[in-house]
Length: 172
Image (cartoon, rainbow, N blue to C red):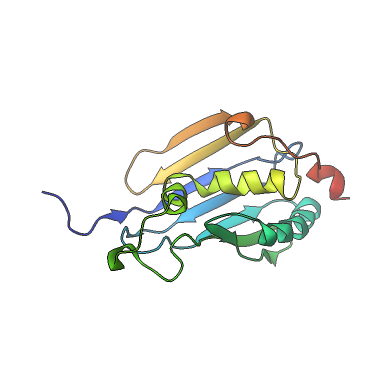
């Protein structure tokens, strides 16, 4: 029997060391459960790391506000402490509509639904903030009740070209 109210389950994606040369700075994307017929909720990213590089990263993440991204936007990064920054991915593919009111499903909506926010974040970090990313991106995915799974992907499978700013050199 099919449910008349399909939903997306809660999911967490942890990325431990996405920036080249810094192994103790990473981030977590947290998807909350929601009804599939509603616009996608904001996905918060909690970024944690040592003081000097996290402060410089927070400054560079301001550039993401100006991303020329079709269908999504980034909130302003907010420093919660000397070692923690939070920001959010915001779906803009259905602005002013819901799927239940007959809005056309756009390619941006489908892309935002199926592409992990992690990929958009890394693409914009490399392409807009010009940050150099690690050659291999590791992720740990936890989804409501399902077994955890870990994946390591070559950076070129996620984003090309890589940025040229080494965050650890900028953090001094």
